[in-house]
Length: 247
Image (cartoon, rainbow, N blue to C red; front, side, top):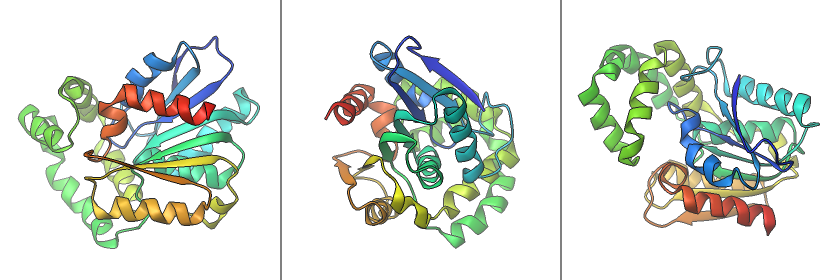
């Protein structure tokens, strides 16, 4: 796994895990805002643009990140955040190692498996994958994701680099992920964020996560769609990180 780093002179370390189909630039602005206060680490999840290996599973990505933290940071960092697929990887990290961080921010994680969607991913991506490199199609897809316009070139460039099988693999994992019972032993203070304009599955998932983590806090985000908090509102996200750590 590849890791981008900012603010390496600081001892307080935070890690941010990007969403599926994106890459480290999901959190580039946050890293730039926080690098004067924290050591910020941005992993590139397997199978994504700039990664060094194919995507296999959420569990394997979690294990790789845990190994990195154990080897370089004595097994613990202060804060880990994640969006969508990255949030699922974070939940798995917390399930595998309950004391890996003091604070966690889960943004827009789906934890209610969908058998139908899971079954349709392979055939649909095999039929439509060729359109991904079509710039006009990419612009329409990008617009539907409600990501701010100045991230389009990053999105288009990196989406074109994702191999078809990797995309199928991480999309299948995203639609099949369910919470582990071991998450209940998590020692971190967990904050769960979701946009009020997200689909019902994400809002129900937030409640499922809270059930597993009795002391966690849900933060509905007024007027926001999936992923908009970290992708479009870096200032507010950075402020939330500071508030969580220093509460």
